[in-house]
Image (tube, rainbow, N blue to C red; front, top):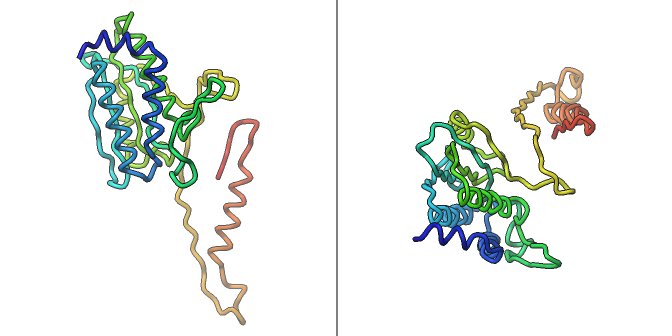
Length: 234
């Protein structure tokens, strides 16, 4: 296909609204492996039409969709990574999957988080390539299950970070539309509580109720939340 012709077509807003509509109409809730992979395959074909090489990589679990990796200028030694995700938090029962345009704004499941973000990234890359030669490779990384922590793909993210000059995330902007220049990270902990058996009538004082202790620890952890310094806990 004529890549230059496609790039000219990509300047048309109607083209991108059509792409957004196709993505929104696909139910890609994080646990819907089939739906997520439909989004990834559609994006793969779209990116191939613009000259990208693409591949879908499986994670450590078969419960989730595949990771999409798309590259252009792949012969370069250093890359600029563009990170986005195909999954949403919406399900088909509570949110009909279709795109609605009202007062110049698009509404639908995942429009902001993150199907619109995916297309903003792709359109920006294509617009850049139409008038510039990049000294770096450009790589789009689309997670299939970001909403639940990108389970099973952290090792792959580390691999693709090694040759990255910079990584740009295409999550939603703040309420005022400003570009977000940094985001806090996440830490996950496994908490184990063990009880101590004792006779309920005679030796209750020797017992330890694991459920009560867990509830107490969770309450203590909750107190670590501090909105002023952007620290949140559970």
